[in-house]
Each structure stands twice: as structure tokens, then as C-alpha cells.
Amino acid sequence: MAGIREFLKAEDIGTVVSAIVDAEKRTSGEIRVRIESKAGKDPEAKARAAFEILGMRRTELKNGVLFYLSVNDRKFAIIGDDGINARVPEGFWNNVKDAVLEQFRKGHFAIGLTGGISLAAEKLSEFFPAEREDINELPDAVSFEEEK
Image 1: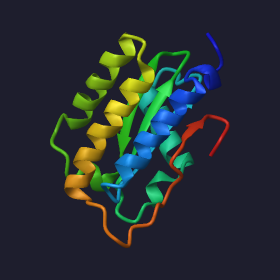
Image 2 (image 1 turned 180 degrees about the horizontal axis):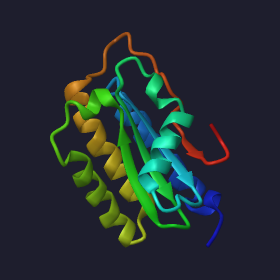
Image 3 (image 1 turned 45 degrees about the vertical axis):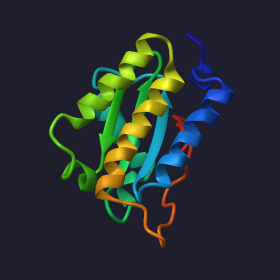
């Protein structure tokens, strides 16, 4: 398999980042994408570790969402912080995950991610609408395992 930096083409990374920027215009929530090579036996635990590494628990309203991909293991997880998890209906993240994975199975990784980001932003904007004085607490970026 190609390296993790080759998983998405440069233009696809730009598309995903644009989706994050657009999403965060509608909400005070923070969305990030993390791509790593291996998750091991517990991709949820690895995703939670990445959530911590990226400082996503430091958002004021606890409304960060991480889309986590493990390229070589072919694993995917979505982690939401406590503020958003307390408000979304049960099964919401699984529904988002299913929509993303449907596109991934077709080889449409950027489409899957942007669609998932849009679904997450829809809920985030419902519970955490954008406010005039909002600040962008985290970088709008796709990060790779060697980065923070």
C-alpha cells in the first residue's frame, strides 16, 4: 500500500479541508481528519489517542469531532467530544460512519469524508451554532500520524 501521505491526492486533501472550513462556518464545533498507517487491534482506542494528541479535548464547549482513518488496516472511526456526544441521538455517529464507509467501499475517499463532515456539521450547527465571536480553536487540516 502507498504511504499515508499518498492515501489522498493533494486536490482531495484540499477538498476535505474546504469541507471542514465550510462546516465550521455553520458551527462553533471543531472538526479534524487524522490519517495514520495502523490502528492495531483497537481502532477506537487509537482514534481516542489521536483525539487527545490533537488537543481536541481542549475546545471550550467540548464539541470537537475527529474522523480517523487507519490506511493499512482499513479502519475508520469517528470520535466526538463529550459536549456533542451528550446531545446527538443514539446511533448518530454510526449512521455517519455508515454513510462514509459506503463511499469508501467505492473508492471515493474524499467524497466519503466530505459527506461525513457535512453530516457532522449539520448536527453540530443544530446544537452549537456559529456565533459572531467564535474563534477557530483548532487547525482546519488533515493531519498525519507524524504531526500534531
